[in-house]
Length: 110
Length: 112
Image (cartoon, rainbow over all chains, first blue to last red; front, side, top):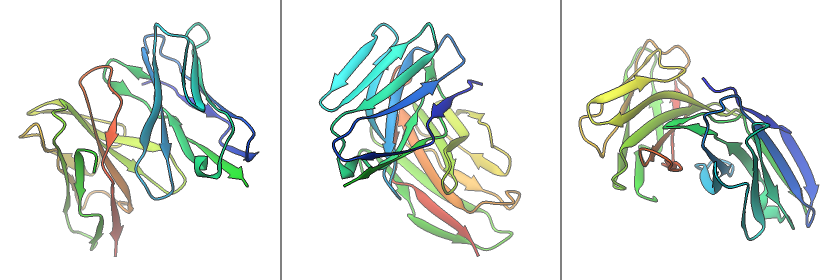
C-alpha cells in the first residue's frame, strides 16, 4: 500500500503564530489529498482537501499546498487559536484507497 | 450525527465473546470503512466495502468480520479470535471516488 509519513509528529505554537504540517506519500497515482482534524475523543472531520490538478487551496485560516512532483502536500494554519489544538491526519488517496498518516498533535499555547 | 451513526458508543466484552458494532449511513454513499484507533495512534483499516455484497480486508482484518447486505449498513463483528480488541472503532463512508470521508462518532470497546 501507500507509504504515508507526517512531520512533525507533535507541534506546539503560540497563539497567533502559524503552523505547518507536511505529508509525504509514495504512490504517484494519488489524486486526492485531504486533511482531517480529530479533537480529543471525537471523530475525525474533513477540514480541507485538494485535487491533483490544483497546487494550492485556501479556506479562511487554513490552506493546503500540493507538490505532486515531490509527492508531498502540506497543511498551513495561520493565526492559530486554542481551538485549533487537535490531531491532524493526512490521507492521500488513489482511486478509492485512503491511507492515513500517523497524525500530528498540534498544541496551541494561549 | 452527520448522516452516519455508530452504536453503541461504549461496549464492554468478556473474553471469548463475539460482539457486533453497528454502522448505519443515510448519505447514499457507496463505500464504507471500518478503522481501529489505539491511544495516541493513527487510524488502521480493518475492512472496507465499495458496493453491496462485496468487501475487502484491510491491513488488520484478522479477528474481525463484516457484512454488507444493504447499502446503508456495514456492521463489524469483533470475534474471540481478536486477541487485543480494546480500542476505539470508527466507521466511515465516502462517495465511491474523489470523496472525503464522513466519520461516525465511534464505538469504544473494552474487554473486561
